[in-house]
Length: 211
Image (cartoon, rainbow, N blue to C red):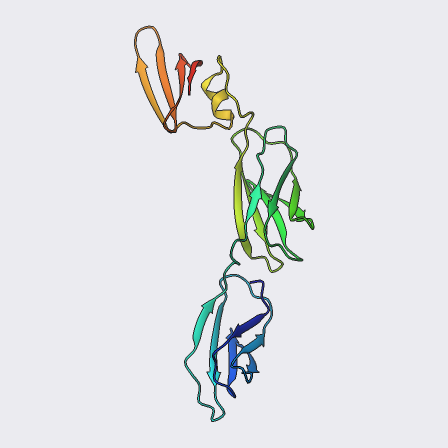
C-alpha cells in the first residue's frame, strides 16, 4: 500500500471516522464538506483494514472491510538474459523511495536498486541455458508488488545442424507439439511452434526450418 491515508466522501458531517488495523485504531472527524482523511502507517499487502463512522451519540455503523492491494498498473519488466549475462536489467512502474528489486536463482538471492528513471540492474553470475530466474519488485515493508521471470538462453536463432538439446538452449525452448516418424533408417521429428513454424530433425539433427 502506497498511501498513508484512508480517505472518503459523502460522510455525515459531525461524525468521527474510525480506522481499525489489527489492535490499533486511528480516527479523524468528517469535514463540513462530508469528506474525511485518516492518517495511518504504510501497510503490508493483504492487511485487513476496517472502517466505520461514529456519531456524536456514540452510535457506530458497521465496519466496512478493505484489503490492502497493489496500486494499479504497478509492474516490473526484465530484459532477456543470455548465458553471457552478468546482470539483469529492466524497469519498474510507479516506484517510490525504499522500493527494491531481487533476482532469485535457485536458493540464491541477488539484490538490486532502482534509479530515478525507474530502471534497475542486478548483478548475477553467468548462468547455464534453461535456468529460470525470478525477479521480484518489493516495497520497503517487504511486500512483493510484482514478479517477472526470465529463462536463460544461448541465442534467439536456430541453425541447421543444431542438436535438439542446442535448440532447447535457445530462446525457442520447448515446442508446442512434436510429431515423430521412425523407420529402419532414421528418426524424423517435426517440432511445432505456434501455428506456422516448424523445425525438422533427422536422427536428432536440425535439417530444415519452415516458417
